[in-house]
Length: 118
Image 1: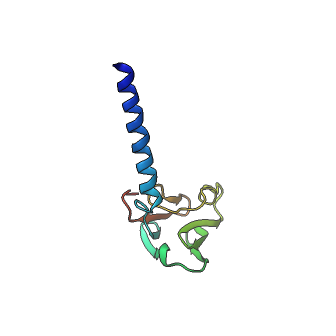
Image 2: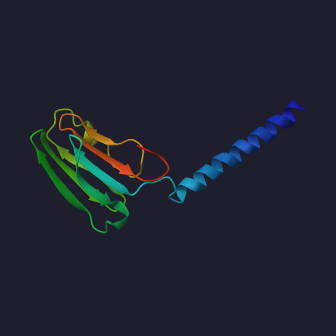
């Protein structure tokens, strides 16, 4: 009887994992609006689903300089003059979840929308 219960648990787990994979592959839970702010002040709101051609935002403030690369469905920091470069190494942001943060420049890029709240 224990072996039969283990088989049912295994089948349920595989079906649940497959269902979650299918759900997220359809784009559910993925936000589309990127919010770029410096020191808590919103500079840009970009709907990444409407971006057709890649472009760069040049952000220069009293805290420093960043170049934010915007492309269809993704946003990233391509250049920064901060010493640690963590924001550059973080790569592309494509969905809600973990934001891109440049602490020395007080820059935050996050994606709103979807089921996850950044």
